[in-house]
Amino acid sequence: MAAPAADSSSGGPVALQPAGDAGRPPLHMAALVLARGGSKGIPLKNIKLLAGVPLIGWVLRAALDSGVFQSVWVSTDHDEIEKVAKQFGAKVHRRSSEVSKDSSTSLDAIVEFLQYHDEVDVIGNIQATSPCLHPTDLTRVAKMIREDGFDSVFSVVRRHQFRWSEIKKGVSEVTVPQNLNPAKRPRRQDWDGELYENGSFYFAKRPLIEKGYLQGGKMAYYEMRAEHSVDIDVDIDWPIAEQRVLRYGYFGKEALKEVKLLVCTIDGCLTTGHIYVSGDEKEILSYDVRDATGIRLLQKRGVEVRLISERDCSSKTLSAMKLGCAAEINVADKLLVVEKWRKEMGLCWKEVAYLGNEESDVECLKKAGMSAVPADGCPAAQKATGYICKCNGGRGAIREFAEHIFLLMEKVNSAGKKLC
Ligand SMILES: CC(=O)N[C@H]1[C@H]([C@H](O)[C@H](O)CO)O[C@](OP(=O)(O)OC[C@H]2O[C@@H](n3ccc(N)nc3=O)[C@H](O)[C@@H]2O)(C(=O)O)C[C@@H]1O
Image (cartoon, rainbow, N blue to C red; front, side):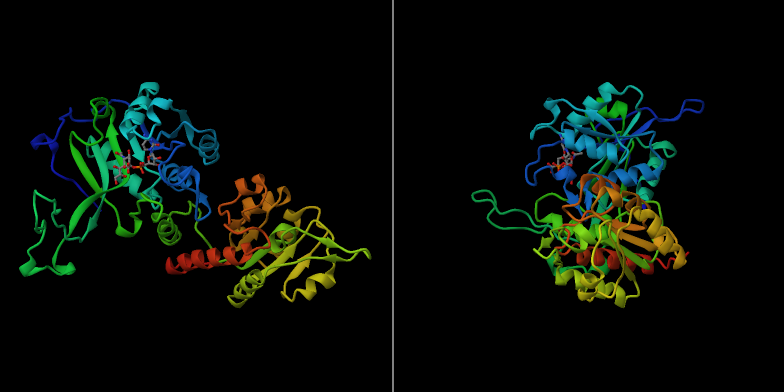
């Protein structure tokens, strides 16, 4: 995967001492995700949900699970970002406004971080704008720094793109090819392509950074797989990144299992939570046909769907919905009921998916192999889940979660994973 580039002593900007004498304590390698509150395009981009996960969450998960960092940090100037960073298990450096401006560079923010953290020898600056990062990428780069003695390593991707010079009025009126011979245009398979910095990460040792460089000394690149190389630069990159991350992103240490049971809370998930009450005390609930379709699709693929509610809910009303789902109502402890169902069906928790929106759903959301909360679910529920829907409860959240489950199940199947 990784291939070393030329040593910069033959033309690079900085030459450093060789690293790592035996007997020296191991280098303290800190992951540092820069996440300022302001952003040029998308507001609060760094914590905007990408496929149900705050943007910084994707890379923090990979950094923490890689196990190669002595510490994992988010440098931010914003309270909300601080909260999200801590939820994911990162430490937070509250940075000054000086390095949080539109004009501030990453290097400015990294240098400031180092001024407050004497213990850190190596910075792995991981950019949240490349959310398809995997722990294995970080493990390999850490080895290049610790064992192979590189002072800096950054990520690149291979592209097969023909470059042409720019036409500038009064300077150059015609274009000329930059990396091809038009008389002999190579086919993709006959050309190795070129390496482009893709912005996923920049690892560098402290002395180099203190000299004002993120790249230098004994330098190498790390070539990322093209499908993992995603860079959210402008707004239109967002939906593409979302599709990419769903297919190729890192979803955590736990291996996914095929889902066999989806449990869905009735009020606020299947329904909007609004109840119309008539003078004769009859209740009218409404649900979305998109959600009924989602349930039918799940059932077709062999996923049993069951409904659960803390409240009383007429069995006649439920059967009138014609969803073909067993339901349990007046439930004081949802976890107990789902445990009972799970055991009856001989399933492990990883084979259970759960859609809930309330405090009473939190335990089940945490235990389920896949979980989701509608966009209008309560904050405690949102904190406990791996996927926050774009749709509200009773307005397509089940259909959306069903699609998410199908996508992840494709991943399970293509990885050839066995059931428990
Ligand atoms: C290491 C580095 O030089 N990173 C720069 C990268 C890099 O050159 C490209 O990704 C390469 O493809 O480009 C920029 O990238 P961008 O502005 O998207 O920033 C990448 C991530 O870093 C956060 N950031 C950046 C600078 C700063 N002072 N504080 C920050 O918190 C952003 O919020 C975002 O999450 C650019 O496009 O202008 C600016 C970045 O500073």
